[in-house]
Image: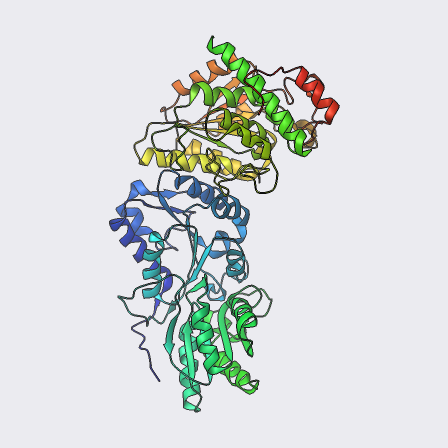
Length: 318
Length: 281
């Protein structure tokens, strides 16, 4: 089984900050807007290097989204930064009308997504944002897994014409994807090849899926791990190719099972190749305060949960 | 023909267009549309520097954003009669497969529209964004926007008003259609707006009061004054007092025609008060 090396724990939001800083140098049309969370979003380097292209909006997310939409008129490529909850649920109608329906080239960049935000608790731990964003016609939805991938994705979305939701997180997590990777929107990355079960993971749970695959391998179960960084458009071809081979699937995401990656995969399978599926996701619940790893364990969002569901889904194969 | 005569004829035709569009689909918002007929006509006929060869980026042009999108009939009439799309297309207003959606949108590719509006309270932010891009692009052209007075009840406006005042967005001229009416009745009964002049001034805006918001000369004078005040570190707002339903006697002095179409007989009466000038579609 192919294995991956963690080159050191680092937060995905720092990958965003590094990508944005690079865009600052390479693309004069890129502008950045922040709603009083510049440090948390790691936007300082861009802000300091390009003060004329950085806009501190204050704690006013609705206004930030509207201003970003307006800035596209005249050719700017605005990147907005705030926590995932305030990037989506708080401003859903602004995104719907002024960005998505209006077809504006705004990049909504959202940190602190999911339970791993930790101690701040459920008011900040949005677990519904992928669903909210993927339901908007024309919206591209990306959830990256580590620092390197987040940096690559940040740079890549500037070249994509149209609205994008880019989701990443707060805690330091394993960094294991290549530093020089080419990030292709809508293209799944098969991390390990296997025959017994397909594990389709996104965001922080991709590393957990690799850890689960290792544990399963020790039990003689061969798992194919697919990193889905783009929830929409979904790489249905890659998913179907794998599930046709393994005949069962586990999806894993730091998100509500309603509306997330798992449901998108289930729809793809239902239409093309019905197969048993298990969901590693929160079960229609809010989060709570706590240490990130303890929360992932309590809500069943880690390698242990993934391997258990993998074993369960294999038993459901006909 | 004097420019005033031309504008009067233009406005009269726009009123007819508004009434006929709304009547033919028995839906839409004639009241506010009629109230803003003079203002939007003057913007496009005399004030703004633009190309009717539409380009979304609008570089080196003045731009207009309609935040209160429900007054789409007046916007569509003025755009079509200013050369953005064929006047004939007004026939398709609110019908299936039309570019003239109930509320304006970019989605169907209608020339002249740069943002969707309809869900209220979003246009001020968009106008500010476009104004900031003009500054970044070293483009000295201006941003004009129009907002309903009732629309100011939406909180996003006050985020935007705070931002523009605090950050000195001085290439923006926002106009409030201050007709003091909304769907449910008088704004003073629904949710009083209080002293709007003082409120905007408290947010560091330059406020111009336009008492005769349906008078062509008065509008022209105020817009010229507003233009002179740009570039002075303050955004500008015009509190434009208009008459909802202006130009149709039975539609004036009431909020009843905010979102109601005239029947056949009412249309006939209304059109008789506004005789054809530039030719009906």
